[in-house]
Amino acid sequence: MSTKPSFLDRPKLRKIERFEDVAEGEARLILHDPLGVAEPVAVPLEYAGVLELMDGTRSVGQIRQSLRLRTALCVDREDLEAFVADLSSAGWLDDPVFRDLRSQQVAAFEGCTVRTPRWADVLYPADPERLRADLDAHLGRTSRTTPDSRTLGVLVPHGPPDLVGNILGRTLRDLPPPEALDLVVVLGTDHQAGLTPVTGTRRSYATPLGDTRLATSLLDALEHRVPWICREELRHGQAMSLELAHVYLQYVYGDALPPVLPLLCGARLLERDSEAAMQMLLGALEALVPEQRVFWYGSAELSHTGPAYGGRPLDAASTVAAEQHDRALLDTLGRGSSSSTSLREHCREASPFRPSGGAVMAMLVEALPVGFRAEVAAYERRAAPGSRPGHAGLAGVRFVRPC
View 1 (tube, rainbow, N blue to C red):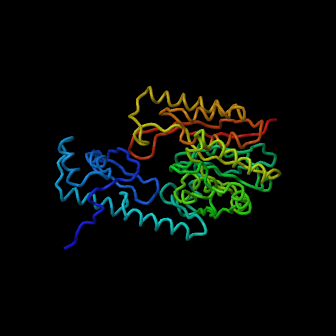
View 2: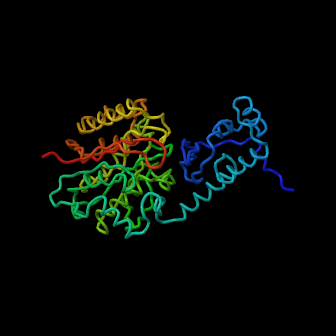
View 3: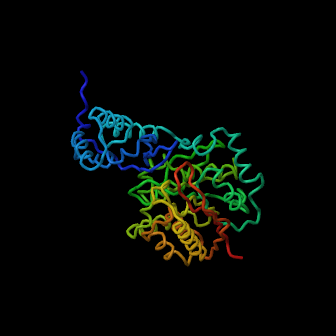
C-alpha cells in the first residue's frame, strides 16, 4: 500500500501568478509560473480559496475545515488530497518535487551553449519560412536601414508579430546599416523577481532565423568590472522580451547582425538602493566601448491593466487614466537625457498604471549619449491576448542624434 509523501501533509503553494478567466461560460483560475518550471494550468475558480489556504501551516484536513467555515465549498478529503498531489507533481508547490524539477531546469540550461527558443510556436512560428512570411505581412517587406541614419536606438514592445507588427513597422526604420555598427546592446524587461538589477548571459540567443553572435570579449571584460553581471544568468531561460528582440533584430539584419550584448533589466533596478549598481554597470560599459559604434535596442512596454494582467476589472475611467499616464511617461522620455531623474520617479510611483518596462526605459535614458532626442513613432492600447479582459500600453520610440 502506497503512502502519501510527508511533505504533502502541509502543502505550501509557491509564489506564482494567478489570473481569472472565463472559458465556455465557466469561470476558472489560470496558474502561471514565472520561473517556467510548471506549465500553465486552469483550475475551477472556486478553488481560489483552497490555494489561499495552502501556506505551509495547515494540513489537508485543516484546509478542508477552514473551507467549510469560510466558504460554501465542500470538498471530499480524497478529492482535496488528489488536487494537492496533482499540484505537487506538476511543480506548483514549494516541496522536494519542485526543487528536483528546478534542478533539472538549471542543469538543462547550463548544459546548453546557446539559449534555445522558449516561446517559438507559442508567440511566433518556429518554422523560419512561416515566421519570415508573418513578419513580412505585419511589418511590410522593405529595407529598414539607411546609410546616413542618425538613429541611436529604439524602444519597442515585446509582443507577438500580430499584436505589435504595426508598431514595429513604424519604429524599426532608418536604422544604421550593419557596417556602421560594432555592437548591439539589447535591454529586455525581466518579468521575474531577481536579486541583481541587471543580468547578462554567456549564451547567445538562437532564433528560427539564425543564431545571434554574443559579444563574448566585451562580456568577459564587463564581468571583470561588474562581478555580479551573470550571477543570475538562469533568468534568461524565460526571457520573452529578449527572445522576441533577437527574433526582430535577426529579421532586420540577418547574418550581418553585429555582436549582441543581451541584458535583462528587472524591477529592482528602479529601487533607490540599486542606483549605485546601475552607475557601476553604465560606467563599465562607457569605459569598455568608448569608441565603438553602439545601437541600443530596448524591449519594453507601458501600463498593463485589467484581469488579464492581474489587475482590477476595466471601466471607461481607468482606460482613459491609463492612456493619460502612458502619454505623460512618453512626454518625460521625450525630454531626453535631462529627464533621467523624473523618469525614474515616474516609473517608481505606486500606481496601477506603472509601466512594466520602466527599468529598461531608465537604463536607456542613462546609457544613450547626452543630447539625444526621443521621437514617438507609434502608441497604441491593445487588448490582451486570450479571453481575459485587459489592455496594454504599447509604444515605439526612436532615439536620434540631434541635427
